[in-house]
Structures are given as structure tokens and as C-alpha cells.
Amino acid sequence: MNPSYVADLAARTLAEDLGGSVDVTSVATIPADQVDTADVVARASGVVAGLAVAAAVFEQASDGAAVFEPRVVDGAAVERGDILVTVSGPTRALLTAERSALNLLCRASGVATHTRRWVDALAGTGATVLDTRKTTPGLRALEKYAVRCGGGDNKRMGLYDVAMIKDNHKLAAGSITAAYEAVRRAFPDVPVQVEVTTVEEAREAVEAGATFLLLDNMEPPLLREVVAAVGAKAELEATGGLTLDRVREFAETGVDYLSVGGLTHSSPILDIALDLRARES
Image 1 (cartoon, one colour):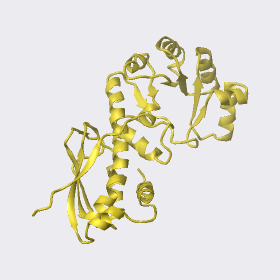
Image 2 (tube, helix red, strand yellow; image 1 turned 90 degrees about the horizontal axis):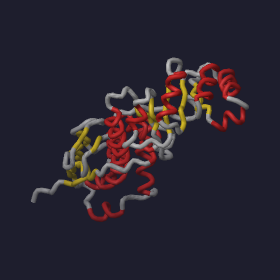
Image 3 (spheres, one colour; image 1 turned 30 degrees about the horizontal axis):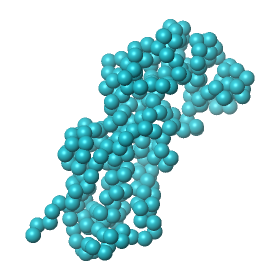
Image 4 (cartoon, one colour; image 1 turned 120 degrees about the horizontal axis):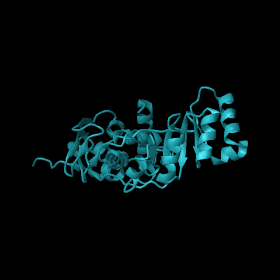
């Protein structure tokens, strides 16, 4: 992730929690000069992602005084009870940062954990699982990074880096060919993907020059037909209605990719907590 994005996300998350004020509970109950150590602990098994963002939250909350010591790296598989990070510093700052850091770390690790399940389900098929733009507003870069930590890959980041000709674009332009040619004229250097729903549309897209097709809501028998018809001429991505219990069936049709919006829009968090170590008496 871009360091400026990480710093900005940490700042925005802290600002949301503090509301322009202070952590009234910590300020009231903890002396300003008190220093402690805490452990960031996995409360469930999963895959870690987002350590850099969590570190930035503690750094900003403590004005650089916190020492953040990861015990694992992003992408690591962890078990319940594993210590992910040890962080030391002003106690007020540690507790002020706690929820903001954990919200981001739990969210990213949940996406990575969910993605790893899909990756494991596809093992040996040669197909890659991709994310989509169905992300949490403001967290797209973090969530897409988490997908990579889980072993998946990213599709386009936004509307600017890949042109995707979907059904509404085809209708507005008049045809697949007309839409494809219009994009090529306007943005000759931008990659283009064309959404198709039939073998005939797949053939038309390839004949127009497309080399990347999105096969929307096709069952395995139809996917096999498209693979046989144009698979040698274009990369093929299946999407729509995919579930973990059936994803292997779709992958074994010969498609190159399977895109799953649920990697980001439906991933539960990975439960992670911060435990302040007991002070010596």
C-alpha cells in the first residue's frame, strides 16, 4: 500500500473516533506519564493483513512514542491465541489507538482469511480468484491489499485503469463492436474487458479485438462452450453466483479467473484483540 494512503487512513480513522477531542476515559483514568506494553492477539484462526495501517494508528496516537513490534508478517496464517504484535508506549496512547487500529486490522485480516478459503478451494485448477469494486467506501486499497495477502489477485482498482464494457454500455453504444471500437479510439492505451452472456457475444467481442472477456452468470456447461469457442484467443473470467462449494466446478471448465465480490463485501472480520499486560506490583 502507498505510505501516504496508510498515513491518511490511520489519521481519518483516529479522527472519527476522537471527534476533535480526546479519549475522555483514558485521559481521566491514566496518568500522562504512565507507560505500558500490550499484545495484539488473535482470538480466532485466520490470515493476517493490515499490520502497517495498525502501526500507523499507534504511531499517530502516540506522536511517535509507541514501539510497534510485529511477531508475524502480513499473509501469515495464525491460530487462536497467537500474539501478532507487541506494542509499548504511553498507556493513554495505546488505549486511544486500540479500537481504531483493531477495526482496520480485523477488517483487513477478515478479507485475507476469506480470500484464502477461495484460494485453497481452487488449488490445482490453474484458475485465480479476483476481487471486484464491491468494496467498503474509503477502504478499497486496504481491502484489495488484503485480498493479495490472502493469495488472491486484484482486478481493476477503479473506473480509470481498465475499461469494462458491460450490458448498459453495449445498449448505449448499439453493439459490442461499436462500444469496443469507441473505447479504443478514446483511450487506446487502457486495457479493455468485455462482458458477455452468450457464445455469440463472446465471438463478436473477440472478432472486434477484445482479449479479455467477463463471462457473466454462466453455468459450467456454457462456460465450457465459450472456452472451446474463444479460449485460445482471450483470457476468460467467470463471475456471478459463485459459491465456495461449487467454485471448483466452475474453475475446471478452463476459465482463467473467477471474480468474487464477496471477498470484500461479505467477509466477516477476523477477531483480534489488544491485551494490556499486567503491571508489576
